[in-house]
Image (cartoon, rainbow, N blue to C red; front, side, top):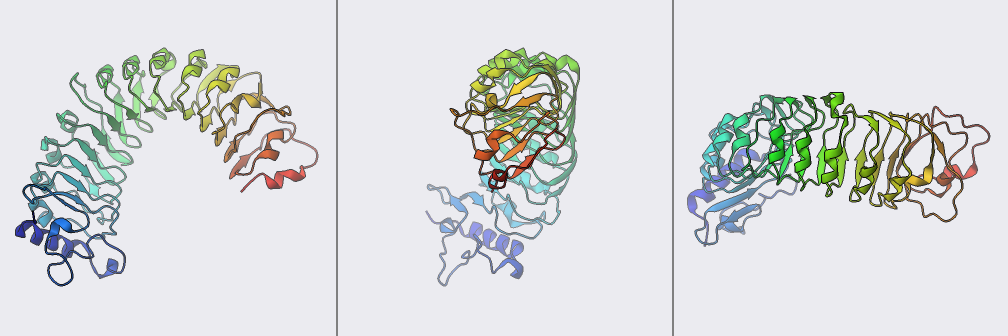
Length: 399
């Protein structure tokens, strides 16, 4: 079916309000949004527009990364497209305008992406009444004030991302057993408070990112119930030392990313951590971990990123234990209070590192494996006891 005349007119008015001569020279999804001439009168065929096949109503609008430089006002014709189910305005510049509360008129929306678009102000409470929402992304804007907590209770919400809004405050509510959330990201915000034990009810969650907030108290062991987790970041909060017991992590066998940087961890690296063989990224830096770094690190065959920097380890560590993964590109051991030993190994296939940080590792010479590196972008060796001549091959060890 062809689109309806009133929706075509609404789209044309929207185009005129959002696109000016300053961006007309670039490729835009709306370049051929015109009626008549060489353009189609059927707005269902326009780039970025999706219509229902049975009734012709506009159900999807994707204007992401379209070089928009304009504000959306409360009287925008966008809000007359009441059949919309999906709206993507990410990656534009809405000139520090606020998110209009009138967006709630689009009551059938299930997908709403307003990320990285220079929105400014408070998140409208009206969003909490949009009961069809399954995915809400307002990350990377300039949003502030209190996050409307009722949004957490939307019955079908699967994805909630409010990250990188540095002045946005809020807290995590008590979750219920019927919550269908799969992704929750409040990282790099002013969210604070205690993480409730009821977070363990979110058993469908695959991604949980609470880093760089102001959460305090203990890390609840109930996170161990989230056995579908693929990504877990609790870094840089204000947890107390009671969080040192991480035995609950043993249940999270699907993790590929584990970031516990600066979470007040104490004690030794637990032996069972080496059973988490799906890990691609592991960050335990900026903690109070002690004891020796276990040789069993070589079992983590899929690691691409490993940081153990700035802990209180002891003893001598053989460099080759970190080369069990051929995919390793970032290795940081700076300030670990270890002695790194790198004996010449002829029977090991080395990963090609891009970042290597070995400050204050009691090195007395350039590590042998540097002569086989070709992709290094960052190499830090300061604070060691290296002496003698600089080997000629060091100049070939980078890109």
